[in-house]
Image (cartoon, rainbow, N blue to C red; front, side, top):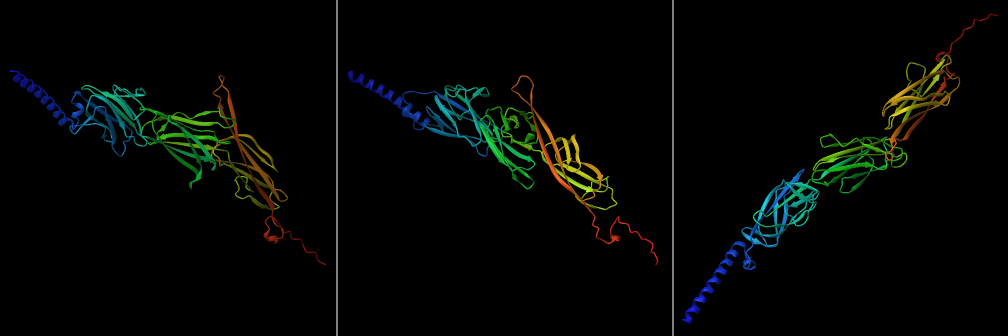
Length: 434
């Protein structure tokens, strides 16, 4: 009887062992060699869902993610411990993985130029509230660690922001080879662009291109300025446009708070992911060209700087033609001739860049060879508010340019045959006989 009881107990133990082994073998079949680690504790299955959103243009290749789970990730019906790499199409999408419950770390393989924001529902690390997508708080990071527990598991959102580009074009009128420094602040650091102007065949100009990333998922701002303004120059044009040529940004801001005579010019605008922007800075300086001619017809502006007068010519007409070859609109003018005196003082006339005007002056023909030296002076004023003061005050800058040239009047030669000397009359006297 005693032997029979021992046999029954032994059979029961063996049956229990067989049951344990069968469970272990079943886990081995399901999880690919992990049965030994799982034999003592049965872990619940959970899920991990990764969602990818791309703002702006998509990259040329798919997005890769490296997943490391505390208790393994199921791949091809096998439980794999260690790193598992999965991909999502370049344009975005999602993927879901089955895994044993526990902590999981998801790392996106970054792409050059693309900013990445991420967050997981129930994230254990990386909490942030910079922005939200699908109700998930996002942080400026490519790695998230969270907990996948139960049938809902973990949901992670990765948002990539395409880089934007900003082209800065620098021009100066009149042409100048001096360097210009422009700083661009997009919230992720200030970049200074030294743009020396070079001859491109149409004048001195230059272009610099920067590529930047968004400082936030929803938007960022670009602040572009030239600082300091080169001495003697004034900003005459500053405009930023998008790739469609549509203006962007505020009216250019100007402030006198830099240093005397050096106002600064800047502009800011909202930057969107994957867009291309172009900002053009044009600076102007005063410059004039004076042409002085002399002729005998008071109704026209002569074409010669030197004439020879005859003895029967009573008057000559000087023409003073000035051209604005600079980049500033000149508004006040003066003209002085060393022989003729002051011909214009504080003349109010708007002379835009590239435009010309003239003054004529008729005087008696000189009796000796005469060379006149004339100087045309023009100026404009630029008023800048002082923002630091509570009472409205202004700094006034004056820009002035002048140009000097000559014209000469000579006497006609007298050693020619009388018949070849215009204005010389021949007098025939009667012959007196003897």
